[in-house]
Length: 161
Figure 1 (cartoon, one colour):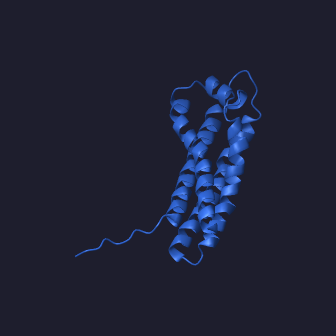
Figure 2 (cartoon, rainbow, N blue to C red):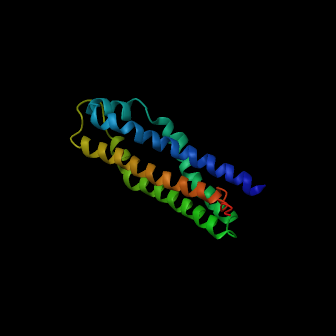
Figure 3 (cartoon, one colour):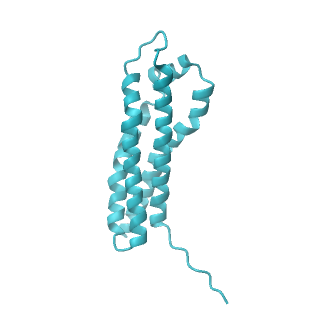
């Protein structure tokens, strides 16, 4: 029963962590190709479009790593399933590391921006922020897939005559 509950918790938190990152990917095309620099800056920096992503997303992104790690521990006696759960743990950790390496530095610059003219470094910061979120989403998707494979029932071979 413990494994069943932990599986539900792991898949739920993994999906909730992936969701906002996937939303960033879906929003990126118009934000990169259509929006003016002023609109991008105002929506992203000054009008709180992503405020809840930090308050809700950060605990999910931090929590998913030990949660899938515990799932891996619970599956330690089933090598195939264990390896997928361990891969999920590592991929979610890589996603967090990618956020720290790519997105956090851009966020630090965004925090210094003031209303008025668009900063000279706008395009570089915007591109780092957007592509960083895309990289994070890709790693989380792979982490989710590995976690799902860890808990999916094994396919039974077809009975051949």
